[in-house]
Length: 122
Image (cartoon, rainbow, N blue to C red):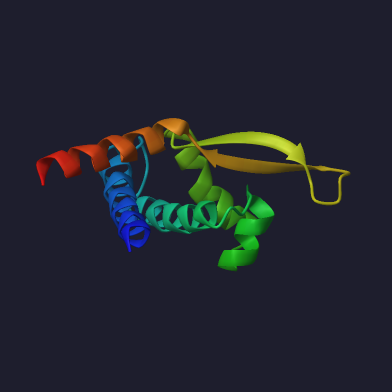
């Protein structure tokens, strides 16, 4: 029961973090629609991360049904914000390259800090 409760709280903290980072810190020229898409994408990416799936454009396209361009439009601002890091890796065929993403370690550091503060405040 404890691990399920911890997972629930971590998900809640992640949602609050995402809202704060995206809505409270707009990028110049960014539309409200773009920010909402980023929030949705962060939710998908977090679920993929929790399932230990690689955060590649191809995997994200497969899961969301979006086009590669639509995925990139939501992902690129998250990289710009410093929420995600991007690396170029070999694709699944081993021949070409693929964009792979990871959450920056600071994201989870902030979640841990928030969880610790929540426990001490309770």
